[in-house]
Amino acid sequence: MFRAGNYFVVFSMVVAWTLLGGLRPAEAEMVQLMPKTNHSALTMSTDDSFGFLVKPRSPLEVDMVGPGNLTLTVRLNSKKKASAYRSKLIVRRGRKLVWNEKLKLFRSRVGNYKEEASLFPSMPKVIKLKVPEGLHKYKILIVGSRRVKMTVRFEYESSADQTLAQGGDDLALVPLVPLSSPDVKPVDPLGDDIALVPLTPPKPDKPVVAPKPDKPVVAPKPDKPVVAPKPDIQPDKPVVAVVKKPIEDDGSKVITTTVEQPPVVESSSAWSGPYVSVGLKFGQISPMQNIGSTTYTGALDLRYILPVLDGHLSVGAEVGFHQYKFTMSTRSLETKLTVLPIALQLYYNIPVGFLELFLGVGGDMYYTMAETVNTNDPDSPLDGSSLVFGGHVAGGLEVPMGPGNLLLEVRGGFSQGDLDAISKVNVSGLSTTVGYRFIF
Image (cartoon, rainbow, N blue to C red; front, top):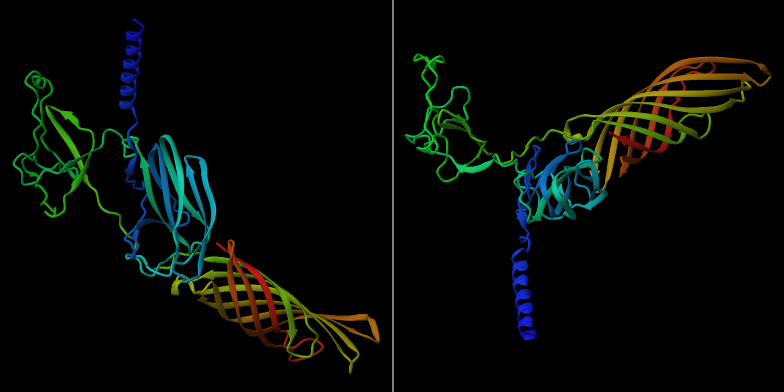
């Protein structure tokens, strides 16, 4: 009995092990994901890998069912040929933030996009995420300069059923019936893409009930014939249709079909970057005439980037401040000259690697306030103001940093006007300033 009991225990363990082995979860497999939002697909010329183009303020959304492993391959892109591109990547699952990173990716030295060769891609960055169990909506977006865009490629490995992510049980893939088939009914005149396709005839054990006599059936008017559309399907490309849930109607069923189209790649060459920038500049200015010595200066700069020449041209306005002090020994006069320059200017940027050189010209109006004191009679100062007109040329460089650019500018100006104590004065000068420009 003891030996027989041992055999029974061993036999039970073998049976249990076999049953548990049959209950193993299904092996994970690669699942193809498609975004729910309208984003173009770009293909790399080097390895034919593709990614969906994501622009700032235009997030990409995609649904998936977990559990699974999601791999994102990200590239930053720009029409400016810089050594590196910067932006911030944000990934949300529903309302939860699952990834937030400031990216700095160096420009790829080989390859470009087949659909948009003017867009320079960066080296790829791979990000791996764990997707928990259940249906989830992921949102992927970039934050930063609108000159920098992103392409993202999905690779999702999961053993979960993705039916819910694809739209539910009411969606299925069926082949279209050729329109020349004798079984196809006329097209419904209310829609070009709706066709009546007969399905399996009703079973004999479910008799068709005739309509009640008090509800007469109205026949369609004979003077409005319905013409079926001509087939426009290429024989060498199978067409797949998305079929909604059938609707029963007197023994027949109506199927609504919609032919799926591949992603449309935007080919617009218009400037899609930022349009406005605000800059603050501080530095020193030296007069070009003997009306004082080197002093400090500052300016507030507002620019509008024109949507031409790929964003290289911009116009703007500037308001500044500087002050000169000088003495006229022949007349024993001391003058303090406060200058408020107001400029309208035009700039042209030249990208050189990770830098941007710029050249600018402008017209200036100087509002001057002079306070003159006679050293022999200091209690009787003489005040006055006037407008002086002139112009300037400028040059410098900008370095992308954070949400804007760090800048250095050298400017030379010329003006000529009359003050109360002196005539034909050049109230401008040669200035060197540094600052920061915020780009929106």
